[in-house]
Length: 230
Image (cartoon, rainbow, N blue to C red; front, side):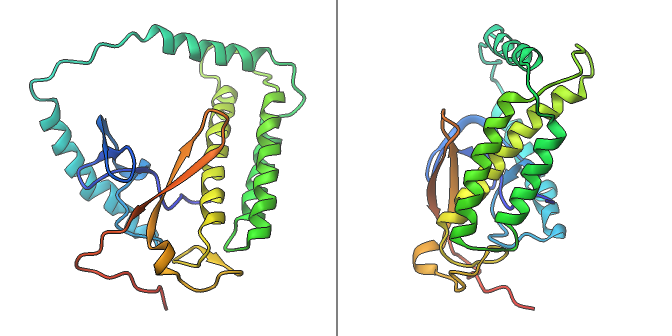
């Protein structure tokens, strides 16, 4: 509801990870979109500033060095513009009956009910089925605004599609993490399982909108992870 405990996986210099080991050349991320993962499974509001302030500065400095002496990469933007135009036209033309607000509220209710503070395998499995149904309803959404400029309804349609992708990644990752850790609390697996789950979850979006998971080991140096207690 506030933000996810994750984002684009990066190293401490803001370079985006391609997987558990490699990096994507020329791709950087920082701030709320990124996840250096210095907070583990617990990310309080004040801690979120660290991603922006500390690693934002490190990423900016790394990026400045990276572009020195480099020319802009060759890019033919026409194919990307054409793809975006086809997507926009498809949303304008489809004779749907569902409104964006209705589907968005159903999506929010789904995440709250099936992937809330306390979770179980049964709940999240049902939630993923409902998410798949809601995603299919996006194909029947109706836009009343056909304007070419400042079309907030079109923006909301695109944002809702992305929100559902993030929601699917969160719920799929939580379903396969059979333990409780930090803010991830499962009633069917109440203990922390370092032997099997002291690792970062990596989620990949497939062409069919399915979420594929992989994992990256947690590197422990000065500070050993401790249970969150008050």
